[in-house]
Amino acid sequence: MGTAQASVGVIVVAAGSGTRLGYGLPKAQVPLAGEPILAHALRGVLAAGVAARICVAVPAGDTVLRKLCAGFAAQHPDVVISTVDGGASRAASVAAALRGLGDGVDAVLVHDAARALTPPEVFQRVAAALAAGARAVVPAVAVVDTIKTARPSTGAEADIAPEKVAATVDRAHLRAVQTPQGFDAAALARAHESLAGLGPGEADGITDEALLMERGGVDVMLVPGSAQALKITTQLDLAVAEALLAARQPRRIMEG
Ligand SMILES: Nc1ccn([C@@H]2O[C@H](COP(=O)(O)OP(=O)(O)OP(=O)(O)O)[C@@H](O)[C@H]2O)c(=O)n1
Ligand SMILES: C[C@](O)(CO)[C@H](O)COP(=O)(O)O
Picture 1 (cartoon, rainbow, N blue to C red):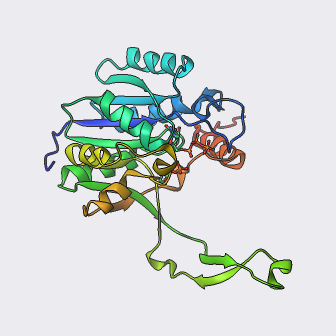
Picture 2: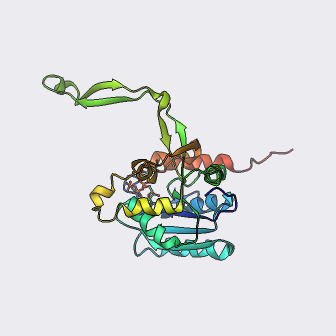
Picture 3: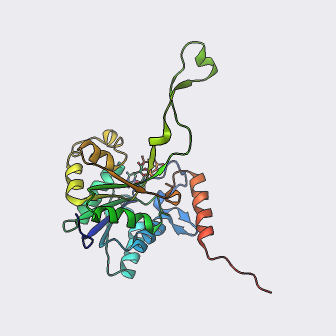
């Protein structure tokens, strides 16, 4: 897009069911420090100050998250905040929100509600790289574990353990990618057109939009992500997020 004045739309995908979290509620509704996960995610987007429009994909038929978004919209009349029904896969939810965002934005940031504590600086880094001319930008962190590939054990080995190491990967070049992922709006729309007609099973393999860009031969630039942008997937992640939020509170100074 190449100009700092470009209009940015942010998609927040919040239509997932949260099966692995196992809370019995759609994940974006699950309370984190007393508020739905989506409320934290929206506050992060708004604090970054990069969005002219925000479109949130919520579970089809949901009224709780729609009401939450309407409350944010009332408090932020300077930003157009809308909701759409999400789809059966993350990719389908992104596609629905892309349509909901409409024309008139130069760049689109796609963000997981599940990465609810992403610091505003991460949004700003992604937006700045787009403004500097990148067509696709992803926040990333280095991988800290030693990574090995596995293959099934065979014969007598299978009685000891189901898998064995196939190889150890050189982690120097490995990056764990996060959201928000930023794209030139036209390039993202074209990439998503290529998904039309995919079944839900096939769409499940599209775990992020950067993959679509890579397939289309677009260079995907990496900017620093943040450990705080963890994806709340399991109960352990929710506990970590609670602890992170508690640590963000101004500390009380005991006097006397
Ligand atoms: N059909 C879907 C599936 C996922 N998402 C969103 O995509 C992000 C990443 O998905 P994940 O964290 O894996 O969420 P869930 O699909 O809810 O998790 P699970 O697989 O445990 O059910 C989340 O913000 C989630 O709400 C979505 O909008 N629509
Ligand atoms: C987009 C993402 O958050 C980047 O790490 C991730 O790919 C989403 O994954 P999931 O398959 O929806 O859990």
